[in-house]
Each structure stands twice: as structure tokens, then as C-alpha cells.
Length: 124
Image (cartoon, rainbow, N blue to C red):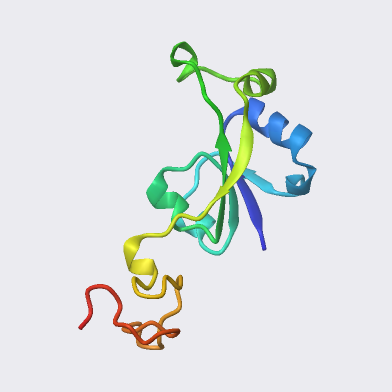
């Protein structure tokens, strides 16, 4: 699966390179759109609606003090702020069966769950 890192911060790129060698070959992009996300593993700090578009979403998670928000953060700062990468499964309500909780498994016409046969939310 193709991996992309979405960040415009040099400190984040350095931190990932230092702590997560498994993402060393990932393409780094400053801004993402739908075409960058669909079907890919994404590492970054995306808005929730964009994280839901990813095949896999890995969030750069840290607690940034209020006085440092909106400023450039270095690799060392990220270490001091307890940065870690955590994988999240972000799913919009219409993308999973609300009976058996299967994700994205719909019949060819998209109206029923392929696993349990329940109608897709909003369908009768």
C-alpha cells in the first residue's frame, strides 16, 4: 500500500525519519486532497472528514502547549511534547453496516450489507 506523509513542517519530517524508519520511503506532501488520500496509508494531522477518506490513517499525536500552537515545532519539541504515531479507524456513519458493523461491505448496487443483508443506512 502506498504511504504518504502529509505535513509542511520540517520538524515532523525529521521526527518521523528518526522514530519510524518503516515510513522512510513515503512521499511527503504539504497539503492533501481526496486524490492523495483514497486507498492510501496517510501519516499526519488531518481534519476528521479527510481522515475518513484514507485506507489507513496514522495520526501524529502530541499535546502542544497553548503558547506554541501556530508556531514552527522542531523534532526536539515534538519529543518534549510526547509525540507518537497512533493508527485510527475513522469511518463515516454511511460507510459501515449499523447491524453487523462490517465496514464498506455493500452489495453491488450499494443498497445492502454484503455480510448480513441489512439495508444501508437511509435505504429501505
